[in-house]
Amino acid sequence: MALAGNFVKDEIWHALIVVISNASELHGYTVRALYKAFQKSNEQEAFIRVAIWCIGEYGDLLINNVGMLDVEDRITVTESDAVDLIEITIQCHASDFTTKAMALVALLKLSSRFPSCSERIREIIVKYKGDFVLELQQRSTEFNSIIAKHQNIR
Image (cartoon, rainbow, N blue to C red; front, side, top):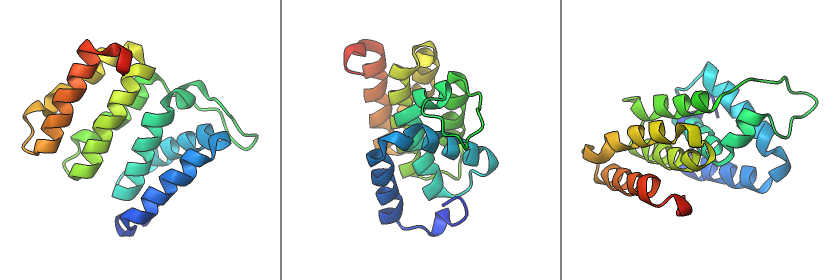
């Protein structure tokens, strides 16, 4: 996916997310592998979507090196590093609407997993309240409200 991402059909990356979500024993390995691959190349849209989804879903496993396999090298990733990666993606002008929307969802998920970054995440999300894409405006407004007022449902 890192090589052919822009040529991968939506059904394929959707299916990969389903496969990843069903392989609970590999969640930690998968999120670390995607994080490392993203560091090397972040140009393929389908790959970026899968990586962002995994980081939003399993970010806590990434920073705590949970589920390490024998073949893996330990990596050091902070909460801020994970948020940085999502922020880079959402600010990239080449990212399309779907990727930016997925990045906003990932940020919302991380806001509950990374309480120390919650305010920074809220600030990133708020930037999209005035976006020209109505869907991003709506997500930004709703997610900001959830972070600010409804911490029990985050």
